[in-house]
Image: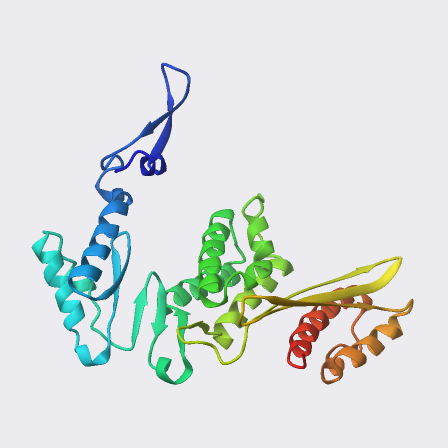
Amino acid sequence: MSQQESLGCVVVWFHLEWQTPAYQVYAGLLFGLPLAVTSFNRFSRLLEALTRRFCQVLTSLYFDDATVTDVRSAKGSGQWAMSQLCLMIGSPFAEDKKQTMQSTGTFLGLTHDLSCTNKTGHVRFWARDRLHDKVRDILATARQTGHFSRGTASKLYGLANFLEQGIYGRVGYGGLMAIKARQDENTAAMTPEIESCFEVIEAVMRFQPKREFPVFPMEHLRFWAASDAAVEADNPGSGGFHLIFFQPDGSQIRLSFVATIAQSSKAYGSLQRLILPSWNFLWCSTPWSSALTSFDIDMVFGSLTMSRHL
């Protein structure tokens, strides 16, 4: 290990004689066999390089997990070649954990689908079913018992973050704030805010939004949108969104839009009819206390629909 990279392998503990924290660079299985995977950082990079160079197989490793991508005409020969290489160097993979070569597979908790890549040019990702079952069990137990402790909140927050990040990035992070806050609270009672978070998680699993990663040049250029809205006592409402269109030459086109509401709640419905007529019926009788949520959603849909016409 190089001197520079060894700085990433530092442990700390409280030294009783020094009465101060002590830091040390470790070079072995300091934490014992159960956590031996922490020392696989160099071996995985070596095995990945050997497989790609000598077996000519597209291989990716993360510590002691590996995935192999090969053409269908190879009929699994790439996986066989990697297995033989691991056997030669004395570190074969466990047979019971091996997946046969197919168009779909699971790696690091995410299921990837290559079946439509030649048609759509995308690889689709979805969190594995076992993760969804764990989340559903936590939600069902909390509702049945009415008990949602800090430890359970921490576990669910981690699972939901992994689930949503694997599906569509960090978009769903805001829908977990009540669960995040419960980790620092002393109560274990269910609240309307936590129930709302549960409903957000269930909606994500019910609609099953697939994350897509392009492997071929995209037919339509990507764009980035950011929106926000505010409603205050002395300001009935204002909002806006910002759009960035990425061009083929690497340049960007930026556009910004601002919307304001007149000094009356009736004008809010007029603004909705102006921005999104088809969505007006959903919030035409929205109480003023929840007007901010509706206005926020208007800005999100406004930015998405506006981008289609620019």
